[in-house]
Length: 272
Length: 199
Image (cartoon, rainbow over all chains, first blue to last red; front, side):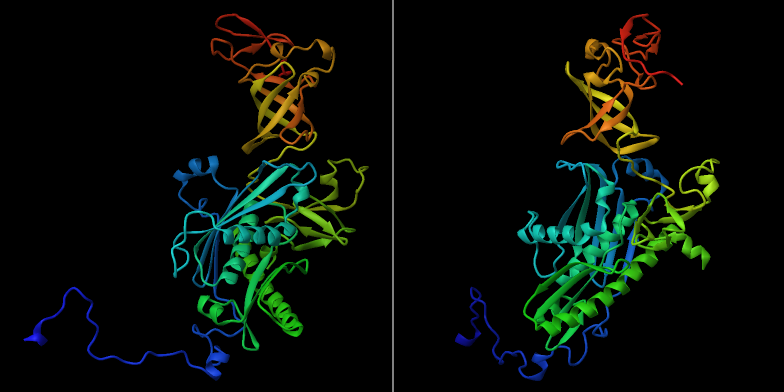
C-alpha cells in the first residue's frame, strides 16, 4: 500500500543515481586545441567574413525619399562567423562640443538585449558598453582625417545583434565601422582592420569564439592600418611573456592585413 | 584589371607628389599621394585643370583625385557661400540655420549667426536688424569665420548676398523693388529687407 502512494507535492528524484561527470584533467585541459578547433579552422584562421554597406540604399526606390531625409551618411552590416554587427555613421554634422581646428569622432556601442546567448542584457547601457565605445573611438579615430572637418562631429552607432567572443566582437565592430565610414565617404588616411587572438596553452589561436575564449588564458586585440603600417590600438587581457606578446603582434598584424584585403575587395566591388 | 584599379579605397597609393598634383579626395604623405575616400580615381590633365591658363602654378602636372558619384554632405568652410533660413533675431544678431553649402544641401542644418555689423558693407552703424531680415526669410550669405562654440559667423555684405526669398505679413512671396525694399505683389505692402542682387 505504502509503495503505491506518490507524494505529488515534492519533486521526486529518479530511483537510480549516477556520479556526475567532471572536467578532464591532464593534457586535454592544458591545451584545449590539441584536437583542433570545434569548427575545424586552422589556428591562425579568421572566421569567414560577410560585409554589406548601405543596406538602406539597397531598398526599393519607394524608400528612397524616406531614407534620404534623415538616414545615416553610411551604414554597414558585418558578419564574422556567428558575430553579427550593424553600424550607422552620421555626419559630418554639428556636434555639441566643437573644435575649430579639427572635428570629433564619437562612437556609441551597444549590445542588443539578445546579443549574448548565455544571458539577456539590460536595455540600460552598461559600463562595459561605455568602455568598448571608448576603445572603438581610440582605435578608429586615428584613421579619420579629422582636420578636414573643422567644427563638425562624426558619430558612429554600433549595434551588436549577436556576439561570440568578446575580443572578437570588438574587432568585428572596428571592421564594421571602417566599412561604414568608407560608405559614408568620410575622408580617411586608411581603413582600420582589427583582429583578436587568444592564448591557449603556449599557442596563439586566432579569432576565438566564446567557448574558445573562455578556455584561453589571455586575449589580445590589435587594430591596424595596413596601408600606413600603423597599429592604432592594442588591447590585452591576461599575462604573457614579452616573447609571446611579440609573436602575437606579428601574427595579429598579418591577420589584420588579410581582413583588410577582404574589406577593401568588398568596398571596391560595392561601387562597380 | 584596369577597371579594378579605377575604384580605389582609402589609403590606396595613387602616385608620386612630384609627378601629380593632389586633388580632392586625396592626401599627401612622404611625397606619395594616397586616396582618402572610396571612389573612382580621376586624372585631370594640367591644361584642363588650370582652365586653359597655362601660367598657373603647378602647370605641367596632372591632378590626381578621387571622386564619388553621390557626394552626400557638405560642411561650411571660411569663404563658402551658403543658403540659410532665419530662425530668430535680436537687435544685435540673427540666428540662422544653414541649409545649403554651395549647391549641396546639408544633411542636417548647421547653426549660423549674422551679426548686425556684418549685414552691409557701408554705414554699418545705421543698419537695423528689423529692417534687414525677418524670421523665415531665406538668405544667401558667405562664411567669414568658424565663429564661437556654437555657430558659424556669416556676412551678407556683398551685393549678391542678402534675402533671396521672403514672405510678407500676409504670407505672399515678395519681390525685390530696390536694394532695401521688397513688395508683396498682391497687397502692394512694402517691407524692408537687405535684398540680394538677383542674377
